Image (cartoon, rainbow, N blue to C red; front, side):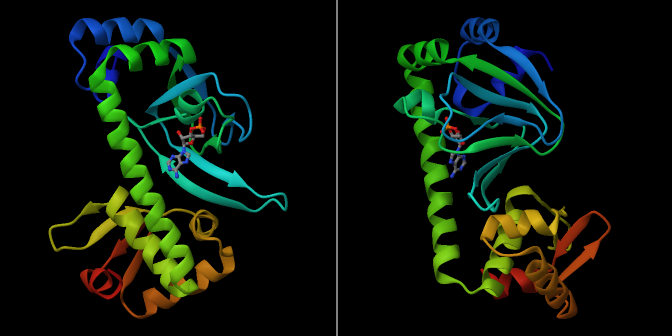
Length: 224
Ligand code: CMP
């Protein structure tokens, strides 16, 4: 996919005319990040917005003790790094490529230029930021109100719905994240996640098949 075609698939740029998309594509540059490399660290000064061409980017906050809480894992067509450009504060989180990833980078001045010239971008940007706030509220309520068993169940359901594909029989299959990744989404340990997943499997609510987790319809009923 060339940069123009790619930009058309990004919701915040979807309403641009062909000419504006071509002009925007000329302002971006492609960058590759091998698996496990850092795109930027929390608290750094931010100078670019990034759009994911391929791969997956983890948005995370690292504690002084080495623990991390994963705020989100973003994929193709998603953007990140807009906050530091919009409020002129440092980066609010660290961004790490969890797979080899290709990104389009747009520098601060060019991003601010398109946002101030195109009302459609501002409207679409607000929509995405609102969705992220809803998701963050959901995450806060999960962390604050559920016990660890409920949190594991909730994050499995969220990942299944966000990333999975629904099978004809109503089950949902999704990529099996590492137990450490699941733990880091909900502030618990890898061992706890392993124990809870085994328990859910024993109850017949999920099945682990190779690189996928399959969620049964009963699981959705129990934890929705
Ligand atoms: P910025 O603060 O520039 O750098 C970190 C980026 O992570 C931030 O911009 C957003 O693009 C992204 N980000 C921060 N918090 C969240 C969140 N809760 N959900 C999804 N993305 C986020």
